[in-house]
Amino acid sequence: MSQEVENIQPSYPLFRNDEYKENLANKRALYEERHPQEKIDEVFEWTTTKEYQELNFNREALTVNPAKACQPLGAVLCALGFEKTMPYVHGSQGCVAYFRSYFNRHFKEPIACVSDSMTEDAAVFGGQKNMMAGLENAKALYNPDIIAVSTTCMAEVIGDDLNAFINNSKNAGHVEQDYPTPYAHTPSFVGSHTTGWDNMFEGMVRYFTLNHMDDKKVGSNGKINLVPGFETYLGNFRVMHRMMKEMGVDYSLLSDPSEVLDTPADGTFRMYAGGTTQAEIKDAPNAIDTLLLQPWQLEKTKKFVQTTWNQPATAINIPMGLEWTDQFLMKVSELTGKPIPASLELERGRLVDMMTDSHAWLHGKKFALYGDADFVMGMTKFLLEVGAEPSDVLCNHANKRWQKAMNKMLSESPYGVNTQVHIGRDLWHFRSLMFTNKPDFMIGNSYGKFIQRDTVYKGEEHEVPLIRIGFPIFDRHHLHRMTTLGYEGAIYMLTTLVNAVLEQLDKETKGMGTTDYNYDLIR
Image 1 (cartoon, rainbow, N blue to C red):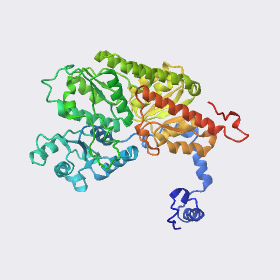
Image 2 (image 1 turned 30 degrees about the horizontal axis):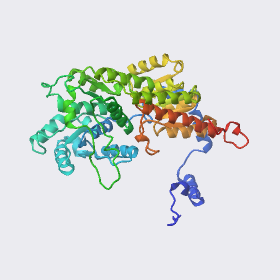
Image 3 (image 1 turned 180 degrees about the horizontal axis):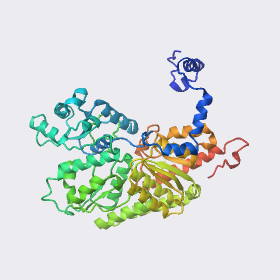
Image 4 (image 1 turned 180 degrees about the vertical axis):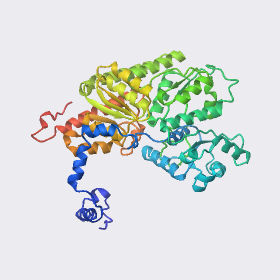
């Protein structure tokens, strides 16, 4: 069973060789004590039924693939968006290894993040010693301008106080008194990655502005602030920069990791690159207003902006699709007095032209989708705009207000009247729906590929293909560089959706002399 130097193969197709097939069959027969295949197929078939779906939706004590990640993951991403900032997680080393590997698999980049490696003794006596040594070492080794501290389950369960620990570390001389150390408590067992981003952002702006408001005046710098929220499409940061510059708007994009998460391979390692500067954070309260690009996921930030910065945090929807991008740009124009330029009008016109070209293929197609609250709402809105029909929409960590807003939006379109909105549900619930309420496609992150495989196992006529839009995307390359916001993002999403439909049509009609009556050259 040896590999040949001249023909080294990966596990596929290597494990399809006869010797491996025989070895795996023997292992199964001798050691696995598995049920007969007939019983496995019987149980599988039962899990695809309406009866099972009803039982599945009534379970209370178990979550299967929750369609969310934990708070510190979001806190790390937020911290990466600030200039020369090192994310620091007060907790176990394993947690930080998870965060780094999770982002590494999505962005295909090394992720800077440190931990103070709490172990059993810290779980009993507290992690202050870890904090003191960790802050000193992180500053000495990596020379960041800011260390942004968040927590994991262990630190939160035992009740470690970040404010006290950081102050004690400074008082003991481990780092200077004025060294920037914003922090946020981010317990993994409540909320989600979007909550963690919100908490870390609020901690960041609180540190730099809360006690420095005496000389601040709303509107005095003539800028607007844009807060992206938990955003993993790097093109979305770039499209915001481009649209604001084309409008001639003076702005600050608060937390922008697009450079550090997309560094070039030119022989120079960049632990830090780009990001929002300290000067921009400190000046943010002087802006005309702060627009939250993912408002359903930024509740804590909104409260801080309104109560401390005294800005209205004017309500907007995530700028996805046609209408909500229109609304966003018109709101920016209203706030700043800057007209929407001809270049963006042309871009809008191209999107409308594309929607006209493609709507016949998307009209009436059924899509099920899952993901974060604002993304799912924006994607649903866009599907309605192109005449597609969302069948089931799932967001694990959304609240009832979000569900009510979703249902209102869906009720206003003839394409949304049959849509079911699910909150607090996981991907095992979603799997049931793919069998009992089969759509044409599902939209979501890479984890949906296992659901697609299950639908194929039941039979090709039951297959629900996955369109990968969301986070994380582990099994395809470079999609994180794409754009989902603005007209540019809508163009990408439209292209992705309609070509998935056409690809599936070709797959279903390519049988030589059997189904190729619709295997057309021109679509």
